[in-house]
Length: 449
Image (cartoon, rainbow, N blue to C red; front, side, top):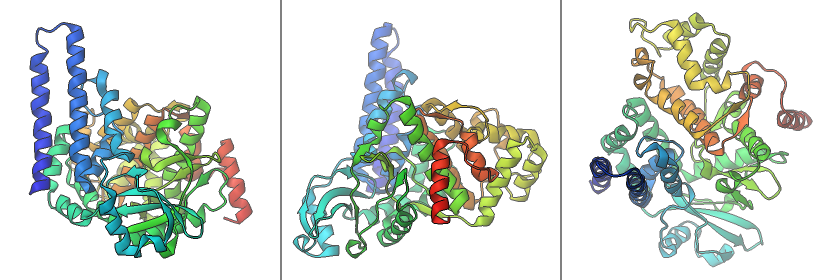
């Protein structure tokens, strides 16, 4: 009741503030309007950071999702300010005092002095499920120690039982995003982040897959020090996403391509993917490789379902509207009696996923990425109202979320590439078209993969 009430007050406060700001602007000169709009944007963001960050768990995950979108909470001229403030939820959320976190660590590992030679009590990252610390093991290895917040399991459970409140908050941001499939996806997958033993096994497997990779690094776990509430992994030195954003265009484009390959291409090449592609999980290591962290939302997909997605994208790429329509009807995505036409299906795929299909260089901006996300979540607010009865099967909800939020993360990076040429590797099995792709293909060939 407490957590649900706080979410309800956040949504209500946002609505009241929006009305109050609009009323206060009546009759004001333009400069005053700009100041009031900016003040409203920052107040809204500050309240969201305080409420969602303080609640942790699923509520905070919602805030992290919002941080990569240009959502219509504030005037367009001030959305960058809003997003910058909300971005604090990615890796600098409100912290829990170390004394409380120490209790969690020792509950899993026993006295800290037996495990660590040194432990920095200031968290280097604070996210939705836990905080991350830097430490040194007694054997001298530098490690990152991920620790669950005390009571976060119960908090997430409460959030899952408060989905009605989530629906209200989502509805105030993206008018019909409170769709049952979206909420079910959150409920089904957010709880997976609580399973640290599962995450440790997954991270170890993925780290082994990328061991020795020339361009990507995944830190391995230290298995003997991973428990139900603590996950210890190799420490990778590097700079966060905010500093990557300041790099020259060519460097950002290279990072963007590697983000695409890690989050998107892996689905079609390995039938599994990381479902949490937000900027807080990407670092640029000091050795120049791109580092990916956080595998709590890693997902394996049945090859049959992967092939369905590949088939549909091929049909759209080749403008085979009738084939796409038949595939969608056969999968129960479109009701044949709803009046949706094959052409409408084709145009919708191009609008929502055209960045994989357009054979030319495309610069991804926050505005472009947000429009694709909103369109995919809420076609009724666009020219695709005929698709209001579309039903995304549960087995595809998670992969579509990963696709859309990878697009959003690349929008924050403002990166350019011919994404279709990269996609043709997994869409048609063609050889690599980029220097990065060739380097990776040669590395895999040497390993016999």
